[in-house]
Amino acid sequence: MKLASYNIQYGFGKDGKNDLARMAAEIRGADVIALQEVERHWKRTNYADQAAEIARLLPEYHWVYGPGADMDASIPGPDGKPAHRRRQFGNMLLSKTPIITSRNHLLPKFGTQTQHSLQRCALEGVIATRDGALRVYSIHLTHLDDETRAPQIERILDIHARAFGEGGAWCGGHPNPAEGWTEGGEPPMPREAVLMGDFNFPPSSPLYAKIVGPLSPQYGRMNNRDGFVDAWVVTGHGEHEGVTCDSGSLNNGKRIDYCYVSASLRPAIRKAWIDDKAVGSDHQPIWTELDL
Image (cartoon, rainbow, N blue to C red; front, side, top):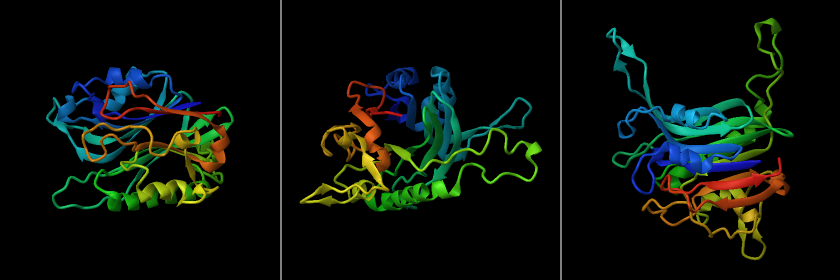
C-alpha cells in the first residue's frame, strides 16, 4: 500500500500558477492520499469547489473532505433567495479502497489579536485494506509557533488514544434493525493509525518527541510501543535529512511534513521518500509504502 501526503497550497505551484491538474498528476498512483490546504469558494481560486474538482481529476478514488475554517459564502440565486455556498479551507482524504467511515476533528485554536490564526482540523478516515482496516488522518497544524501547536498535538494524541474504545460510527446493535442501522455490520475502528500531513515543525521541535518518543543521548530515539514511529526514519533516513517545505517562511528548507505510523505497524513499513521534483505547491509530496 502506497500512501502520499501533500500540502497543495490550494493549487498554487512554485511558478505561481494555479493548476490542480498538475498537482493531481503528482500524487496519482498512491493508494491513499492525504491533502491539506484544499479550499472551496475563495476568490483567489476563482470560487472553485476544489474538493469536487480534485475528485473529478482523480475519479478512481473514494474521497472525503473536512473543513477547518467554514464561513458563509452565499450568493443570490435567480429567484432572489440565497444559493447555499460555504467558503471553506481544510483537508481531504482519497483512497482507492472504500473509506468506511470518516470524522472531522477540529483542533484547538489560539485566539490572536493581530496575527492570522486559522481554525485547523484532523480529518479521519477508516480505510479498507487487504487485511482489514486502517485508520488514517490528514492533518494540518497551525503555522504560528510550538506553544499554539502543543494543544493541537495533545488533542490528536487523545483522539487516537480514545478511538478504539469509542468504536466505529455505530456499535452495539440497534433495537430495530429494520431501520437500516445495522446494514453492512458494525463498522470497524482499528487500534492502528497513520498520521499524515503538514505539522509545521521540524524534528528539532519538542513536539516531534511528543509523537515519536524522547531522544536519549546514549540510546537514541525511544519509540513507545503504543506510540508512533516516523516512517522516514524507520526506512534509514536521518531525522534532520530531507526538505518538504520551500515556502520562504521560517520553515523554509526543513522537513515539516510527516507520515507517523503506529509503532505496532513498524514491521510493515517498507519505503519512504520525498518527491523533490514536484512543483505543484510550495511543499513536496511525501510517500510511504506499507506492506498492508
